[in-house]
Amino acid sequence: MRTHHSLKNYAAWLNDFLTALSVGRAIIVGHSFGARIALRFSIDHSKKVEKLVLIAPVMKVDSFVGSLAALYYKFGDLLPLYLQEVWSNNTMYRGVGHTIIYKSASRERRKHLIDMDSMDAKDIDGRIAVQVFDDFYKHPSIEGNKKINTKTLLIACDKDEVATLDSVEKLYQRFTNSEIKVMKNSGHLVILERPIAVGTVIRGWLENGKIKP
Image (cartoon, rainbow, N blue to C red; front, side, top):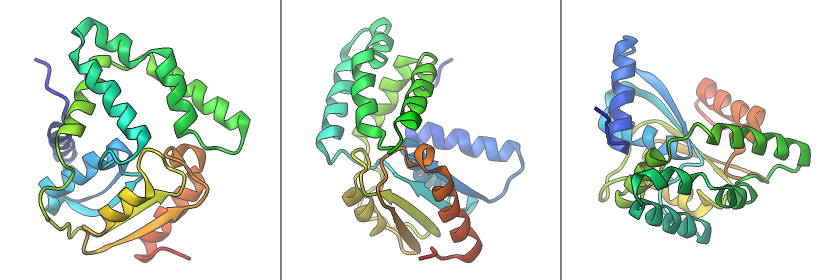
């Protein structure tokens, strides 16, 4: 039987995965929507999280781009199941998305990343995409005024139009033991466009407990 794709169920899957590997505590790293899943996991299973790294975490709709995406997926949710896959993978939508999320200064690298994304998109189940975004927009990332005590690194990007700098800075205020690093001249897919820079920041923080200036 197919399980509904939601933040809570993804976090439960991760818990089952770690249990199957006999991993008691782990460093959890997530990017974009994956960062939201990582955060959900840290809330539901705090004792299993040694450290938490959230890269460009998408926590809420607070931009024009985010509002358009929300409207797009809300409409998709109204469509019959057999049309949802077509709707979520249509060429025009993905073309606009590529223009927004890729900020690489290199035209060649941008084209390479877009080509890779287009190939991966062919394997995406549109119904799952609609379920995920529907759950995302219906539920808050952190309930009420809850504070997160897990040692956490947040990485934000100054040109990110999806997980805006303002939204990540506001999320940062919900943690009691965290640091934030703003990647300059970077967009939402910083892990693809600047993987070495991101890896260096994370490794330095994990080894030293602080962000290197």
